[in-house]
Image (cartoon, rainbow, N blue to C red; front, side, top):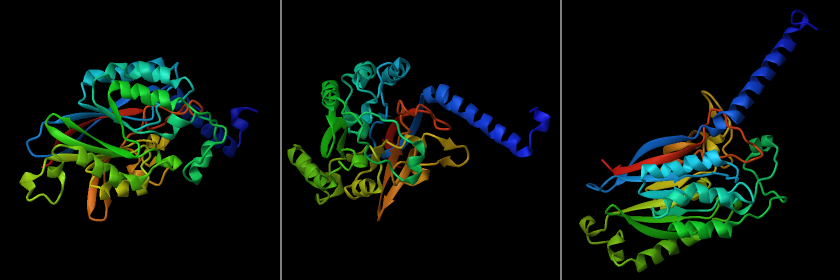
Length: 325
């Protein structure tokens, strides 16, 4: 059958098929490896504080053979960040830890914090991509356990703090930071009930802890502090709890920014219950009378069984924290 004898419906079908094939080729062969550094300023520091550069990385889904991605992440050390925040899903293969070491060895000595994602516990499995339109993905019985213990030991060797259902503090360029975080909410491993006790214990161990309490005699007597919440998956229950606990900035990943987006429309799915308009980038999260800045990373990788991105390039974020106006 020649082109001239094709029906209009057949021509439309062929055109749609060709467009789909071209989009898939672009998303899998080009955009998936267009690693991008997104930059943003966040006004959360006390007046007069020095700016602080925070490198936010997430969702590497690392396989050992992904040398270009490892090299790109390694090059980010040249930015000389003051802090690394890693929001999970580092592993994407049973030997993914090999690639993680190659990617992060250059960050040794730079302060950091991290939380787990589900793919730090379990390896990827082949899934029907249309299942995501029905809501967040569920557990997969065929998934293999990954070397999360080795991952934690490696991050500890870099000097990074594990924030899974706990809290930690750091002093950076003269500003005191309180961090708290949760284990992966997507798997239901988050223990929000432990956060209050973790913060109380953190402050009790701080030699200047009395100056942190909001009932100090005056504002001038309080120690200037920035409070940061860290989670892998930005479920609303977690974001609301973080805001209630005084977080001024919340960092998350998990969504891949939608991974496959429609230009002019945005993400089709979020794989959690966050609104689509906040699936990626810096926004403001409000709960009750409180607000916090929220940065959701689109992540740097994909499952090895779904190696495609469209209108949503992989990214890391360099957040420059500056004094609030």
